[in-house]
Image (tube, rainbow, N blue to C red; front, side):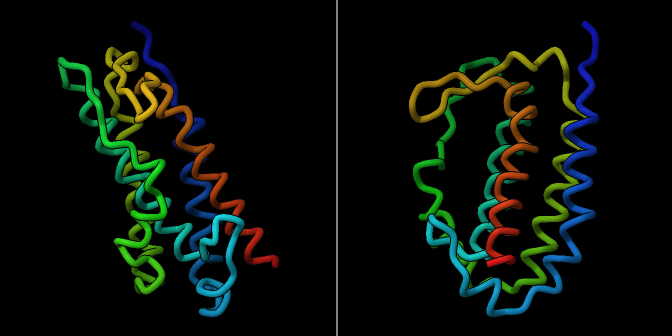
Length: 158
């Protein structure tokens, strides 16, 4: 089996980290805590959601490479706001949250680069019963990251 090259994705994640970290670190407290998007999330909450995304995807990507059985993971999509509230991202130390986001995504780059290509068809079922393959998860990760980074930029410019 030919190894699939995910370098466009991993390079994209790396570029997001490089371009956004300093911007995030210099934002004023009122900008990160008071401006809200259409989902009523602040910049801190959006970045926290991206940590949740990395965390959940990391678990799925690892487990899909060794499980011999159909995996059904808790799907936090319908509970995103609950995850954000329970972890109290709004009151998290901003610099720590940025570091957590950065280093979790650096690990995601490593994980994606190390993935066993023979397992890319392994899948899990989301809460709606939709099958999601390991390859689809990897291919969708950067788009999801960029979607929320764009939301942050909309709030910065508001």
